[in-house]
Amino acid sequence: MRIVHVADEFIAGRGSQTTHHRFVVTIFGLYAREPGLSVPIGGLIDLLQELDVDSSSARSSVSRLKKKGVLEQTGKGRYALSTEAYNHLSRRNDRIYTPRHAENEGDWLMVVYTVPEDSRQARHLLRTGLQKMGFGSVNPGVWIAPAHLSEEATDYFETHDLTQYIQTFTSTYNGPGESKAELGSWWDLEEIELRYVHFERTYIGLLGNWRDRVSSLSQPELDAEAFKAFIPMFTQWRTLPFLDPGLPKSVLPRTWAGYSAQKLFNDLNTLLSEGARAHALRALAQKE
View (tube, rainbow, N blue to C red):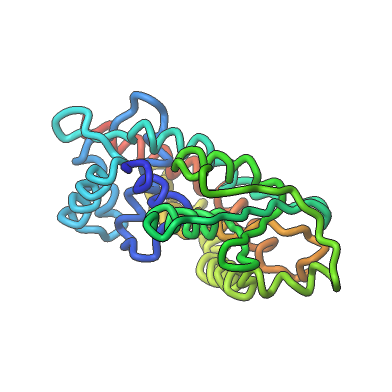
């Protein structure tokens, strides 16, 4: 099923993806996501070379994404997002920019599934999809998340023809004990926080450095610098909100790294995105 590969490229990324492969997905998602827009391969290669990606690696990534149904060839040397990829981005994009947190500890979405032994692909899709949407595992066939993920989960199940295997419940935790004490067994919160910390440590210095560049570069140079800084930053960030379930703030530490990492992303997005977009569109237009 081609749409399986499309979701696999976008929902929290894939651990096996190379950096240049992720860059290609990011560039198409940012600058060619409207219906009818296509990208000349020459312009894409020029942009990727600014990110230290050689042309053969760029072409290889485009070829793989085409085989997986993420990209479609629309003409000689031109590629666009497939309908499936466009639809996926349209449904998921808000989570990158405005991740939600549950308002209270009361409402949880519980997913229970039973899959026959001969339906291994369905079992794989359920497990990986639930993980990449931010669900926690209570037991092998019982998964839980804040109730605000209900619409996203339902869409995933329907898109991948998985509804025959699942039952969903909106539930309330009644103990014994406090739900906060169980979170560590349902989610690897330490690993999620470490990813936020890594993001901050990698990009916190960019804020000060970028302000220094603003006064010393012309606008085209500034836009090019913005692009080279923005694409790696955005590529690393875009997976994190999908791994984070958006637990109620009342059950998270006050110093939860996700809060400061989100602010850092917002600040960098404000500083860099406009210039990066201007540079990318100019580069792509030159190859029309």
